[in-house]
Length: 221
Figure 1 (cartoon, rainbow, N blue to C red):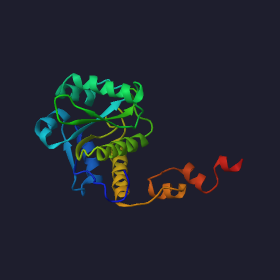
Figure 2 (cartoon, rainbow, N blue to C red):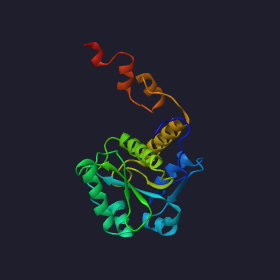
Figure 3 (spheres, helix red, strand yellow):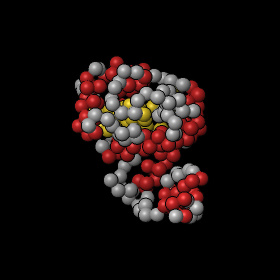
Figure 4 (cartoon, rainbow, N blue to C red):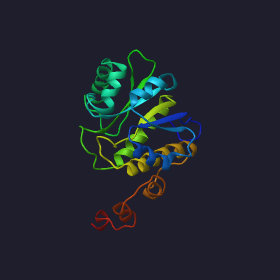
């Protein structure tokens, strides 16, 4: 997939969370995006009303595809027990049973002409210490959907519930990923220097800037 403007972006993204505060934070970052709709509800209620409108459902998962709690369990309750078996079978095939955090797999939903976008935000259920995982998970999911022509999808507020990341940070990093994917599709530019990465890829950090300025310990050897 080349970022040359010829690849289509997503038609519709539904970001779903049960927490009004989370939705309010997302609203600050996405309210002017016509292809993004924010929904304050649980995933099962959403699917009952919108199942015919969507092509893909995103699961903010763990690395092993164990779907026994939170959003994962709600998806199994809605789509059936076979969903977990399918997810684990694909993880076994693609990653020998453990899908790396931040990657995304497209998996068939048994009995439905829909896909699960399986995106682990944590290896096992636990708080997320590095919020950049939210950026990576969001970006991987959007790219995977585009590659597989899944143009109407749901997204969770990555990292908000089990991950225990503050709503403002979740919204900020999800927007950064959204902007990066959209911008990359519109432009035809090559990443060939760290300066380009720092200026164009939402890199934030004093250590990285020090590296660019030649102050890194690696540059003083």
